[in-house]
Image (cartoon, rainbow, N blue to C red; front, side, top):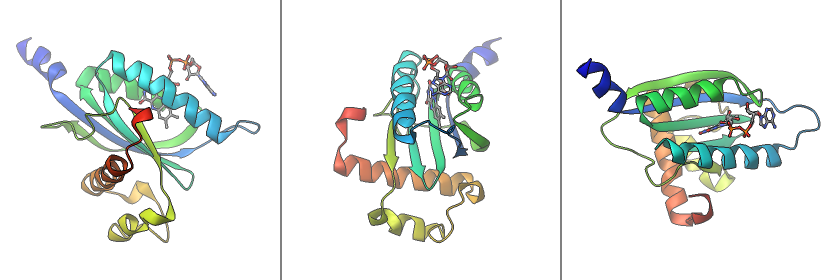
Length: 156
Ligand code: FAD
């Protein structure tokens, strides 16, 4: 019993990648704006933090927080028709939050960020399903670094 309680309180991180799948007539810009607003609202309520990368028709997202909250949130995300082929790249306990400043921060990659993809050999053919847990986390942490520099406080 004690084990169960402590495991739900343990900090967990889940990283997944999926393909955008907007319906005809849906505006990707509006839908992404809407899902980020829902993310900030919902994640704040359950102490989930994270980062969402949007690049070339893909989403790569890290979620971190209490295990149960992370799994419940991911369960909802997984059923969302605005994306498909969701693949969990890594999931498990984490020693500290890597994205603790944001209930959900989103970043679209620009060509100025290509050096990051180079180091992960992902520039010519971005396919996050090929990332390992470690390389996905490196990618998202690099994105966090850019975000810290440009300081998009509005999304915090
Ligand atoms: P509302 O936002 O009020 O939506 C009500 C219902 O309608 C939900 O079932 C929702 O899925 C559905 N819905 C709303 N808009 C659309 C639409 N345009 N097309 C189809 N169905 C729609 N949610 C989080 O809470 N935290 C996250 O970190 C998070 N990350 C996400 C990342 C991605 C890549 C995607 C695609 C979605 C993400 N979401 C996230 C959104 C999540 O999938 C749910 O839509 C959201 O959590 C539901 O929030 P809500 O209960 O406040 O309902």
